[in-house]
Image (cartoon, rainbow, N blue to C red; front, side, top):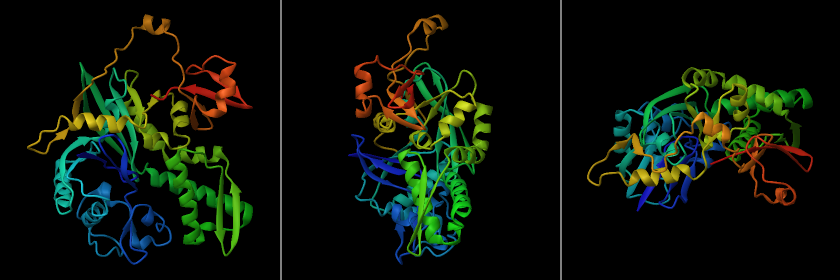
Length: 390
């Protein structure tokens, strides 16, 4: 059976042929407990034991020495090896979806590392290709994705019925870690102003704040209140979403600048699940007058399943192009003007998108027509915007 690994240090996910997740962890390592641990177990010690923590090995993928004490690992490649050894089962046929900027030398190193574990890599595909493949695409597009320490802007070209990766720009310093650090500093300032307590003076308090932020990012929710317990005293502060938005704008300014340089009026912008889960990112794109689509959660799995069928059985290859099975044709201006607005699939409020089928909307839509994309509707005192998530 073929398994698929999405090679991303913010979310290293392995799924089976049906798209069912069998492993989903952050690529983080820690020896704080005495043993070398990975994933969420390691992430919980990032701030309390920084000298015994590392979360850069998966994206670096090289043999640089490990800084600090992470025995028995001596270099970053060792950490990749040990994390692959923690997988819940041996994967005899593993297709790895890798960032488009990875070199062939890095892939050779990864194959050598994994060959020392019970797992077997049978091929590579560009992750952005798998993410975009089953989205309705008729023109060139740029896919935005996030790793821990950088964002990725992958350009895909459509020629006839072929979708091909043509470029990948990395924007260092605009990753999930930078978003977390910015919000942590903002939250610490709020604690100092309102309670005269500085949570950044205690690693355990820093860790509590980081956990709440990372949970928000994983779930795509809103960070409205943060609590910290210290010396049996629990303190809470409310966080102004406008302040969070301003801090996000500061941290992601280089990303927005890079987008404006490479995105033209004929280029479609696609947001990965990692990108779409960052509260406030779509608002920044709206302010920058950038048009985008949000990829659905099942798109990568469907793309990976299609790409795996093109893998030769007798050699390991890297796929950077694929056939668009359900290509849509771009309408003419006259057709576009006459076409009715599509129905919304989700309602957006305060950076949170809920499906129109959600039970809290049932009473409203019993007495009102369906919502279309771009339409504002008021339900139970809240204003929602109709959007379409394909």
